[in-house]
Image (cartoon, rainbow, N blue to C red; front, top):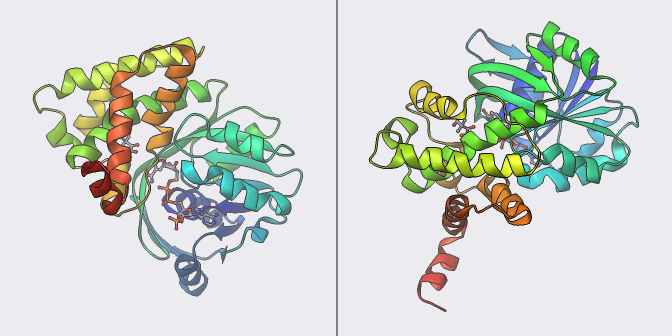
Length: 307
Ligand SMILES: NC(=O)C1=CN([C@@H]2O[C@H](COP(=O)(O)OP(=O)(O)OC[C@H]3O[C@@H](n4cnc5c(N)ncnc54)[C@H](OP(=O)(O)O)[C@@H]3O)[C@@H](O)[C@H]2O)C=CC1
Ligand SMILES: CC(C)(CO)C(=O)C(=O)O
């Protein structure tokens, strides 16, 4: 299979790398320093199971998507429209585009930008990071749940044969919501307090707050006609128990001075809650606080001086 990865970061390099390692023709589309490193030495995949230099193609421009059968779309949520527009003129008509992103509406937003393609949502259960240009570090898991389409079963089999356990499910959006709710509960609190989950969770008042945030989200999902699978309170508790040293991706983005995905986490719940008439005061507060922290220092001091 010819595979293109749009957004060669932590997620794109892991899944693209697994397919390249299994013998598929993979091209990573990413930023120059990373592309140069991969061209020179291949991608270092330092995973929980192996540590190998995996050769594959890499490019900085969207035209590299030409000829792809499968596109792994792995940019962060705020970049969905811009990256999709860049790909549009170069995409082969039959290419399946898989959105490997957190947030519940990326596939829908991407489909609006790419009306000629089949865009399928994927729920991504992995912990990965870029340790440097051309160097992926994998901390655990790696399975996918993808939405149904004419080609989803074939693609799932290809991924599974490459060491990526993949399930096709009509409930992928419900599973994305379940993940979104964990992100709504933890990401902003970890970012605002700059604390890992193991410090945050036992602090006074935090556990009922996590549950109250989850309840708000669940009410919005229900009003939106989405059935969210599983025991959410247990899932909230499990995050702190299984990842005590972890800072949320939102906390990590803020610490690196990068834009966060908060508009697509708590911000999404606020927009849907407002549209559906469901009260969302906790999500609104968390969203607003992270937006304030995201603002450059000059904008923050202007706001605080009342000008
Ligand atoms: N990392 C993880 O363990 C997990 C992440 N996710 C989700 O997966 C998605 C991807 O996350 P992750 O891989 O961590 O993010 P990264 O920031 O590591 O990767 C995205 C990469 O895409 C690049 N990029 C953005 N736009 C373009 C473009 N137009 N052309 C080329 N490159 C581009 C970014 O560069 P730049 O930064 O310079 O813009 C960045 O290198 C997110 O929605 C995240 O929430 C889900 C589960 C786990
Ligand atoms: C599940 C969680 C909260 C783990 O860190 C996450 O997905 C994130 O940080 O974005």
